Length: 246
Ligand code: CA
Image 1: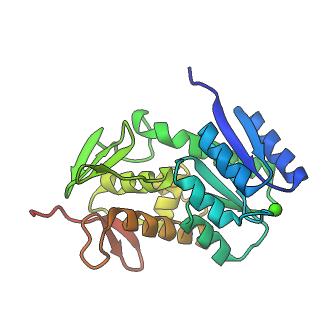
Image 2: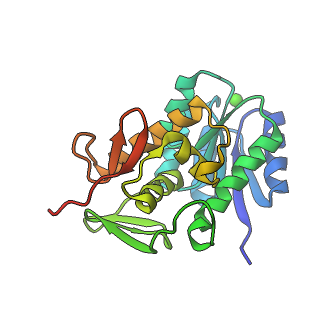
């Protein structure tokens, strides 16, 4: 019913590489591995993977740069694996194009759970789910045309290159319009969980939502002061900016 999903593991540590390879294989992926950043960038371009795990500490190119280069050609779901627990690294990784991160050592089960939550996301809009109100298959707001079905966002005739995470956040706001969504709500939305079930959201996860929103705002060319799409509600979260007449 669906073709094999492709996973790419970019990791120089052989033991961790093997561990991640096994986790992704068990999750049903056709897994490829790369032990350097440059090999990873090449593989990402050639294989068009669905999921990439990216070690931040690689021998040749640093993981942030690897993520930026991969993002030029790929909308794969990128999970950064970092040995460094500093929040700044994590946020820089997300700014460079990562979707999610895990700090080493991590539990294989946790990695698998994150990958599986992500792989459920793209289909969420076509299935009947309790996650959120359904958005129209095609919706347009202040000149931005978004198709949930084909997962495209077109502004002034140009398709925006959004990551899956950015697209899902944009869709979340389009779904709920002027209702304010907290950062925790949006973090749960990214895990494909209902807004109101109250599963644990860490500060770091909320900060990750902020970074993704910042990236999305940049790609939209949206303004914080006079937003056309992403309105920040200070201290609370985000909502869709009002429809304008111009
Ligand atoms: Ca490493």
